[in-house]
Length: 257
Image (cartoon, rainbow, N blue to C red; front, side, top):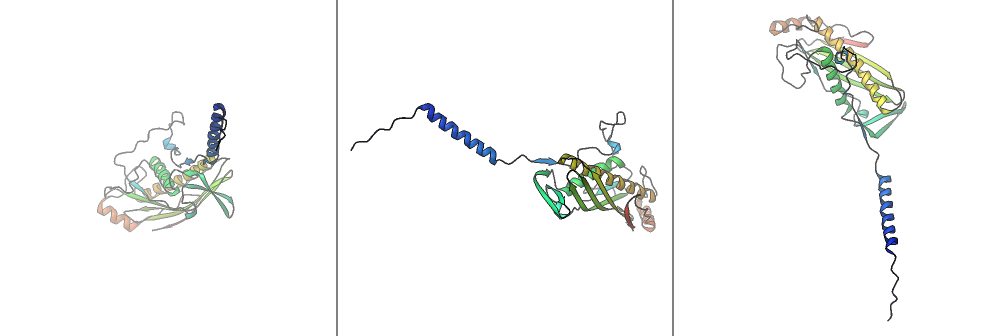
């Protein structure tokens, strides 16, 4: 039996076929690759006046807090609506429709982002320490801050809205102020602008909470820079009085003891 010998292909042609196949595979993989993710945070930008250098109004100043402030705050974990309690940004596309953005994400869960930004801003505004989860002296007045975010809406190119019920409780006297803040911030196009709108809205809520803490401290017999009643006698007097000032102006509010 005789076999015909097939002619050999030129090497240049073989290399061309191989390179062409490799290039086609690379193009196909690039087409199938996911777009890069972007991560956002509500912290990292100083929003309080205390964090601004008075010399030029722009450069952040070094925040200095006394080792033993007159009173402390405790910022508790923040509750947010279940539909936005995820790493992906959830944006409104209509009154009853939302869109989940896989490539636009929070650096941590929104509740953690809000609590961290709120704690940073309040400690700077009030010149105190957030002692949540840490040991503290028994004779130091403590104001516990809790927040329940009822609406956290993101409307790209329109506005960012935060609707939150929050409270400030004097731990030693159990006097509590309960208030509601509704802040609507206009935003430009892009997700950076949307996140910045939420940052500004949260800064306004923080301003109102800081005013409430100062009012509670003043009602307890001190001021923002002085201590309230301390010791067993002070605690007893505080529990008897349990003075609760009204919520800051221009708010929907309720108070209780």
